Length: 379
Image (cartoon, rainbow, N blue to C red; front, side, top):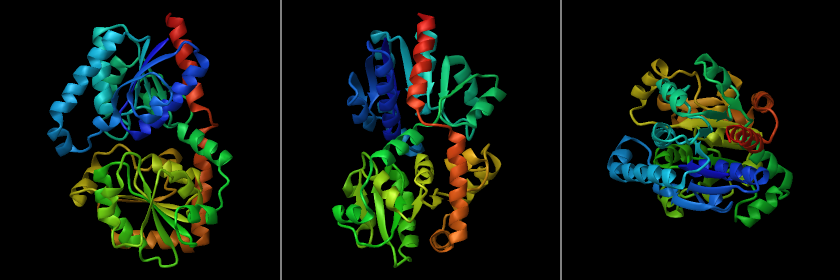
């Protein structure tokens, strides 16, 4: 069968590449055409656009690049119609993908599958109307989404969480000691505080300076920054120059494996950190902090922003967001997770609850199997 896949950022490229691999294993005639990244290219098929040409975040960057965004949407719609796939598979990236879904649903009989649901349970719940209208099948990776969509009379498939697969696979093959890891990366022989400042330039700019200020107070630790895919070293240098922070790129999992504690921006990284049993503080700076805090309190549909707490439906890790993300608050929480053993153990017990709720590994394989079964029935 012919699969057209759209992923708009680094995390989508990772998850989509694993789904493509699973589809190939179960469909020997699988053909791919896609918008994505290098990991998807590694699975074969033909890339139309790299996600680096798509990922714009925030009102002003989107406005400045609006002609490019609209041009990309037009190209994507035309390309899908010309290639005429057996299915269109959308991976997260809702601003772009829901627009594509609407067009394809209206102008063709190509089924639209969504892998990794838009997080409409947190914001923009009205998008459920578009999803029910334009998306034939939705494949969820978060267990609590099942009840949310059931409330809206929309059946979805919970297939497990691919981050669990990725971390489990890494742990099964990784054998490097902390001493070897530090030596290979020219680090000191000291406990590590990991800094995960986001995957976009704006996130890094907003979060990293205060994260460094807070973590620098812990002289017995070395500070190691996880370089995100697609972010050049030069972007980090303007923030870490003259500080004790060391940059390690493309090695987030080894870093989390060895870290004693971590400061982490919200997103998939919070779940990855939990699955490595690394105590963490969730930090997310926003401009106009007090105004954003008001919106969070009155408009957000959920109590938490980190996946760890959302899955557990209770506070496992401390979230410092908007007006609560201060250097003093980060210092206090870092002290608790590095010095208070009872506090650390309570967090680790919460991590185990999250792990249990995710179910077993195999999310891409489960999703691929269901997709192929549904398409076979359609055929």
